[in-house]
Length: 113
Image (cartoon, rainbow, N blue to C red):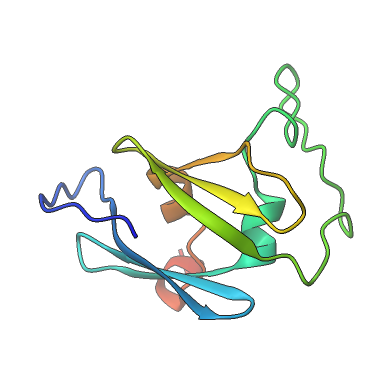
């Protein structure tokens, strides 16, 4: 989905985004890293103003608010810095920066940090 040629180790970007299974997305980064993401976790971590209070920073999504059957229905690259995900629940306003996606990586190496 997202392609970029240059490798900038300070600001890696997705080279390939793919569905691993119904509940998991994968990203291959331009620095060679492989990330895995439970889609429900991505939806729960939406950074938009509907999901996080702009003034307090408090998360508006509570445990159990997001269905276990949530799925991304469309991904769109936004400039060279973010991915916009349209979800099966109709939500589509979150811009997931490349930096945020790397922080949310669920691979064993990143989870051990």
